Image 1 (cartoon, rainbow, N blue to C red):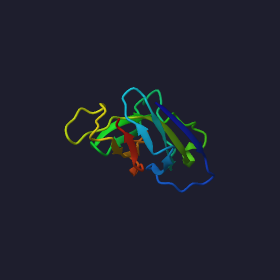
Image 2: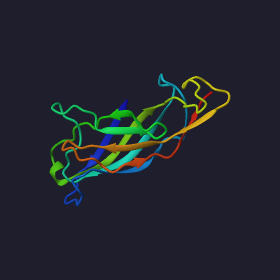
Image 3: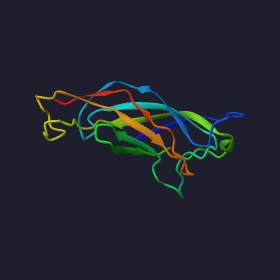
Image 4: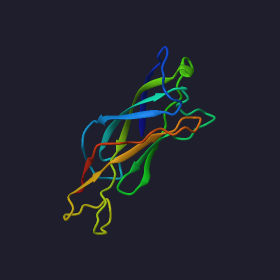
Length: 153
């Protein structure tokens, strides 16, 4: 799992100390289901943080990006924003995060085993709710991806 972060420091940002994120888009809207990285999509969103305390450190190695599968309501994937350089971070940071998200399994509402092709349900749709947490514990707003169609067969 890969998180790519780019940022830029501004002379005098006026961002709140709680991180703010905004959904940008997906690299594609369809994936094959699977548990062994059969397919993937790149999820892109922007961020702003007024006190610049994003990113994990050796002292705080916890993941700080959370993807909740809206079909189940469970956190399905977690990722980490790498530590951002301290130069200018006290002035706030903004940037774009791109995450390589691997495929997930179809969920069948007839109780069939997930991840196994089902001729009665050739498609499923998944959306993810995303939020991030900075080192001070401030939680960002939540964003939702556009629907991703899963090919179940």
